[in-house]
Image 1: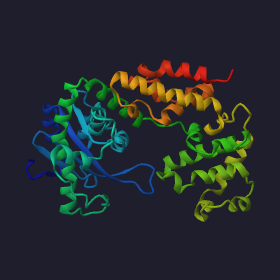
Image 2: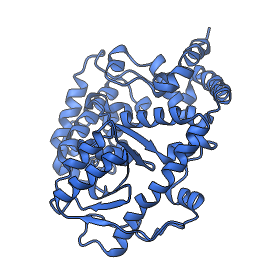
Image 3: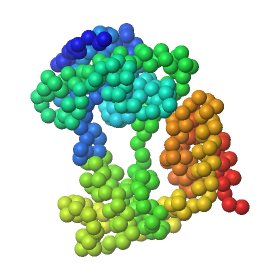
Image 4: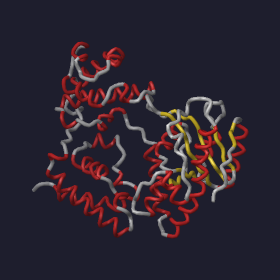
Length: 384
């Protein structure tokens, strides 16, 4: 049974340095963050929780403590960072220059050690420790001060239980011969969460591209690039500048005046006041693009017979490979990952590929297992 949770609130940089020194001797640290992201592009850090050995600390990033020693600790290749479902934590750490050198994600480990299930933190704690996690503070505004005792205890519990779960999962992974695979997947998560999409290729993340002709795609390209650059510069979430479907509608109708722009459904009056000139400039620049500059057409999958043949065969191939390797097929490749391969091979120009990372199923441990098979399937799926 786990003892009652005790923690130290770090109020000075010297205290943090002492904790980091202890963590280095331990060799691993359990970590979690609390943050707020409502209207901002980047999450706003509200609290950091960490446990190494018998020391559990909470760090308030708003009270002036210099977190540089912690970020340096996480970057130390001799220190393992333990998280649960740490995707958003990794994004925050990347922003803060604290990207972990090595990572063990207990959600990833659990998935590889079971049937691929993506278990939540509370469920994992209850299953492995027979402890019911208090969820009453899950909607806390972590930027509001002062934080209550209940909020701090809730936050401390995240790493207290995590530090108990990690050794058990790591031991099971070693016993079942899956440690290397789990660590490889965690390393890939670090790399993916640290990527920054080139703004010039932001059009690829917007649905509705298949509805547009060449000039429309060019306008969408200009709009998507402008929106992402603006979001990064002002730290504003993309939908609060303009939602995807609004960009698609602008690209389709190609308004040339403020009045025409004002007739676009769902374009907020405030956005119109702030961004009308920039949007109209995007329309003009998009229409001036040459054919070679226009994004390549990517049809809808349900209208592509070759895709249907590829996808059916690819699912079967992944199932066979997964069973032969003892890997749940859900972890080997998702529908989106299979789609990314198809688009990469069939539609993307070399110039577009040059600005993008290779598809997940072409890189890392997945690429080793399935890349050649998928390439063959795409070739054979084409109509003769």
